[in-house]
Length: 122
Image (cartoon, rainbow, N blue to C red; front, side, top):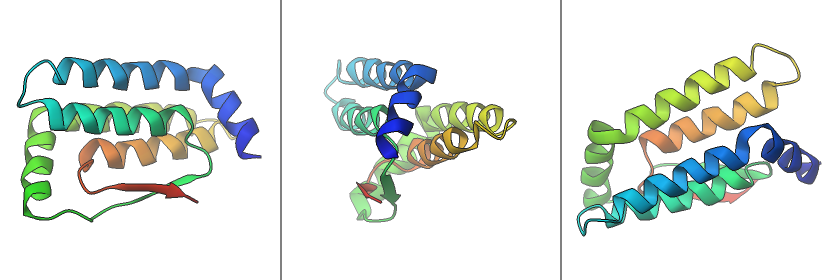
């Protein structure tokens, strides 16, 4: 069932979202300071590509991760989170789109707190 969900996901915009996260990561990796943030974008892009059958475990970060998460949220994380929240709400407007909206809500969490997040099989 996860395979079917992932294939439909790719057709309904999952590929576009993964490309957007990848491009964001490439832009962030242009500077040395942005490399840790770009790496997180690549991690999220791989999750966005095949989200069904995976879950997120938040909160495994130390002091450095906390500082990076604060910088992330203040600079660009809130835009990612709001985008995924809005798209998730649009998908949830229909009964068929609810599973896809739930996936976007997971991405909104990662858009706020990517450092220390663990993506694992559900």
